[in-house]
Length: 125
Figure 1 (cartoon, rainbow, N blue to C red):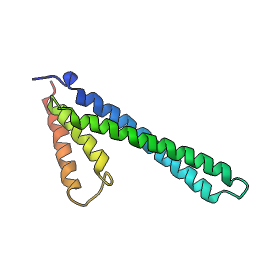
Figure 2 (cartoon, rainbow, N blue to C red; figure 1 turned 120 degrees about the vertical axis):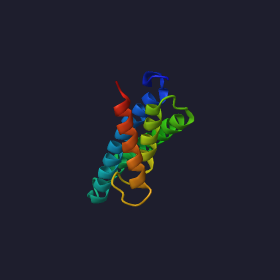
Figure 3 (cartoon, helix red, strand yellow; figure 1 turned 45 degrees about the horizontal axis):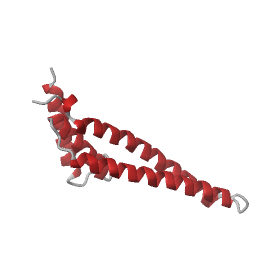
Figure 4 (spheres, rainbow, N blue to C red; figure 1 turned 60 degrees about the vertical axis):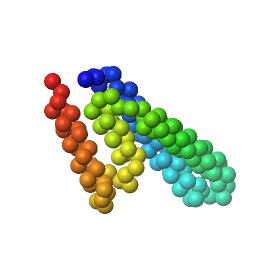
């Protein structure tokens, strides 16, 4: 049986999660800058627009990066149960509307994710 260290999907998924955190930060900054633009006085509006557009570009770049990373993850075959769980976690975080969405299939999928995590933890020596 291959070891988790031999499964590229685990490292790729960790990279995706780090990029997702950066994406979330970029979304928050872009939202703040957009709000500042709408609230700007006429004399500050041009600068506020420039800053808002720049923040939106960063957000969009991070969105594109996430997609590239996700595409690579899902083209790569997992070699371990841990790799499968890592890929599943990326799919969940990328697609679910919120971590607490009560509408099926999300509660069921979170239950599967918890089972995978529990079984992997129990299988470790």
